[in-house]
Length: 97
Image (cartoon, rainbow, N blue to C red; front, side, top):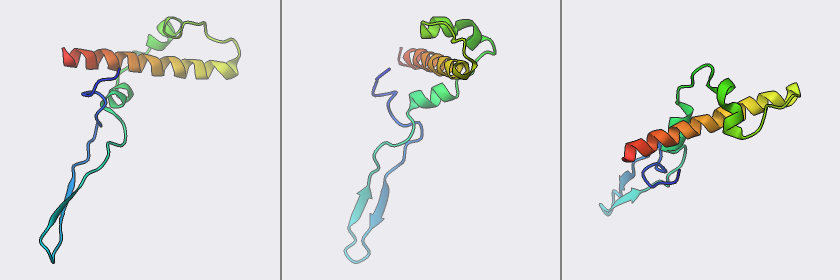
């Protein structure tokens, strides 16, 4: 979900002001937005019900869980991450309404 209100940093850095002692000139050092966005922060902190991933993984990812145990864990992690971002996008969309 690309939106200028949601792509801003979750923890913005404020510019630092410095003053040249000899000239008295003030300089502002601005930081680029770095770190996680508000969307990332919402997704990471999105509460997940215990059974959400189990119930909705196949629908969310559009494919069945793999049978090989070595691939199964990555499948569940991928499903949970996608669901967290889907929930975060819905929350941020409601925020702009």
